[in-house]
Image (cartoon, rainbow, N blue to C red; front, top):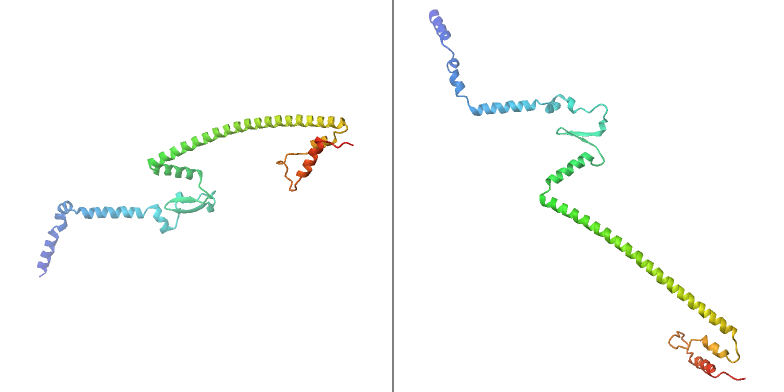
Length: 219
């Protein structure tokens, strides 16, 4: 009985392993899908071990994302997807330039062409308005000079007429002859019925003065 057990043990030791005889065959018949899945799992594991995700596990911020000592912590709003956003009352110059470039790149060709045409049109309108304004100023200055000239001429004529009327009045006042009293009174009256704006009827008084002028009373 002991000899049979010893014989069985020797046979087991002499038999080669099943995997050793089929190693080349197993390597040649490896499943491509399994290899692809294993590769994807390795890549995912590498991404999870990245420095960005390790912040959540370890709680330590990498040196690249730490705030410098000289910078106020209140100046940094927060970190979102690895981008640092800084607080400001308005867009900075760099941000405005970037947004303008993005807008120009995102605009269609038709809109950009229309914008350029509008800009040229507005510049042309501004130039025309400035030219027209200069012409109007020149015309206004010329008309104002002509108006001053007419006013001065009219004033000189009025002065001459008043001076002549004053001289005639003085001469009439000095040359007083008997029997010319009513004639001088009639000269001071307006006998034109259309120019009279009085509400009272003065036709009787007008006729009396005219008759006295034509036939003065004889004493």
